[in-house]
View (cartoon, protein in one colour):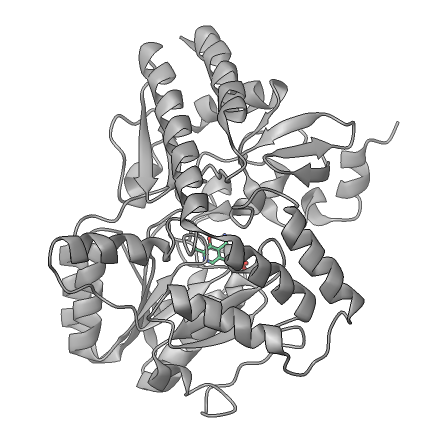
Amino acid sequence: MTTFTDRAAAILPGGVNSPVRAWNGVGGEPVPIASARGAYVTDGDGREYVDLIGSWGPAILGHAHPTVVQAVQQAAASGLSFGATSAREVELAEEIRGRYAPAERVRLVSTGTEATMTAIRLARGATGRAKIIKFAGLYHGHSDSLLVAAGSGLATSGVPDSAGVTPGTAADTIVLAFGDEDALTDAFAEHGQQIAAVITEAAPANMGVVRPPLGFNRLISTLCRNEGAVMIVDEVLTGFRAGPAGYWGVERDEDLAAGVEPWQPDLVTFGKVIGGGMPVAAVAGRADLMEQLAPLGPVYQAGTLSGNPVAVAAGLATMRLLTDDVYQRVAAASEALSGGVSEILTDAGITHAVGRAGTLFSLFWGLGVAPIAFEDVARQDTAQFARFFHALHDAGVYLPPSAYEAWFVSQSHGQAEIERVLDAVRAWAATEA
Ligand code: PMP
């Protein structure tokens, strides 16, 4: 009998439309998902799982939130796409700026990849310089100049770089170890006037979750300002999830509490949460830089479906539902789950570390201390994670199928869901210890 997996593999490369979905990091056959609601996903056979993928970030309210679904239905009934400006795009952009002050101007696009690609082009166009600095293990989507030493699916499959990226493109990308202040300072000393931008995740979350060492983001900001380079803060994953103003907001609040002037990104990218599960992303930032974009300036960027009315309706409805109460619930779920899992593993003598940044977290397998650089992250015991993943999957918990990904919770992950996960972890730990 032909299985779904056979059929998928016969038409989609690897049976998927995005690599990590193929379970290449854990082995086995991925189960197709048929529907999702709240904290749960249901597979084609009607089996329900506590979902810890959350569509890789967007589902912060839980799946199929009735208000968001209704907004989408109403928008769809009024036309799927106009190819002309509409009011909701302005409202979504205002909603973003209202929560994230450095986003003085906003350009909506459809994917995080487009957002970071545009930010790089804009930085190069505005500075007239070619080189960019990125950090090993950080993922900014799959545009050529950023597919060098990237995290996420590349970390999972052990592919350091993609074929098809020309040496010329890669040559303009300088890769440094995340958190290495000396390497960053030296790179500016060596290439200063050639560096267009430094791109960094506000907090790395594509090689597991890494809290940036104290002062590291500020150092990037200072060096960029002193050398006339652009600091691009990628908040595609962390934006409006790690905290109400992304991970930048977490550091801003810490700085304000310490009486220190917060650092500011020049450009920032968003995705995931701002689309509420639909394809919406954005590049945003300083007005003078953003106004270099066409039609005002010489840096070209465009999109047939940019600011799509149905997608924007989902994003807008989602953003409007993101109250302090939601963030408190997400934080509580994140703490209860990460703390609970860690306690069980510790009791069972299983070496691990928890990486945390705002409400985001991930587990590092076989490492006693939460790592900062990808070199250390890569020492994880991925075989142990694979056993863990399958045991939890069998018990009705759907984890991201890779040791290099964050665990995504939502406001719908309440005590019942967390207990179900912890029970599964306990059962596995007993077999593993
Ligand atoms: N930047 C970051 C930090 C991301 O996590 C991702 C996706 N996981 C991207 C960029 C790319 O976004 P997309 O998959 O929408 O192209």
